[in-house]
Image (cartoon, rainbow, N blue to C red; front, side, top):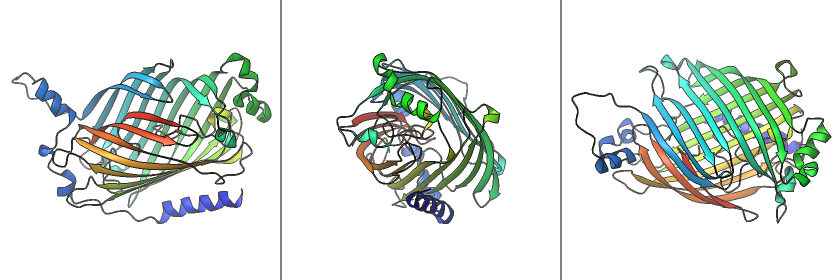
Length: 408
């Protein structure tokens, strides 16, 4: 590995290993009198008062949100999100399950089911990520090719199937370790228009590295290490989350080629006020690095490659791509409606870097973006926000990004 690559890995590992947890806000401040807060469900109840019945129903933490929005990666989107926040046991941390399905003006079909579940006494943490996408990306090439101005775009469609399950065992003091398995299939890959397919980055890279340009598997075993002191999984006011994942993609599980990867993630939340903990500075570092072997083109890490496809706001899905990729983000979150917490806002910036096709020039170029966003409190019990962001990057790149829950 290059010296810069080694330095980045050392820094990421030291941050994950040595960072101290931010003391979470006091329970009184963190709860912040839920009875005074107003969310979208309260607004709907005022507009459409529920009928009085004799049946007492248990309050549900299920958020159901029609997904109506737009971002430059998907076009106009129509769908529905289900977000369930729950405790498997009174001694367990809050668990989250999210199911969403949508269809877009670019003929995308998106179905995803993602879970983060804690068992009694937080003994185990199970994380799942199941996806089917009839996907579409504007492919700008690998490494430095994406920096061309004006950009050269190769619209590419493909089917994507993912089945990932990871299990973490609690080792004490908020440390977890475990393993998992992941199956990733991309097929029916084609670039548009048809007369550019022969020269598309996917085809050129696949020919050079010995992959089938229309279909490939990346199936592997996972080894996980995690440290987690966040006081809430949806919108934390304090704490740290770090995750190190080693992945071995092997032909024994049907992978097209052998390869090794390292994923690193670090999140840090700092509440700036004890009496108003929604004032938060949030930091996020996400990186993926190839350690050995070869990866197929569309499986190389890229903008929005993280679990919830939220990194790199200001650029489209897959804008920057390479064997090694990193994204660093900082966000200031603040309340607008100080008493009801119904409206809040964010200011953010992010910085991406990527290696070229031969895994060189990592950290040589930094691609920045910045933006602002509005938040509407959808469910105060689960701290679920409706998020609308606008961000601008370089090379004339910009866009609106609509979602449920924070980017990180």
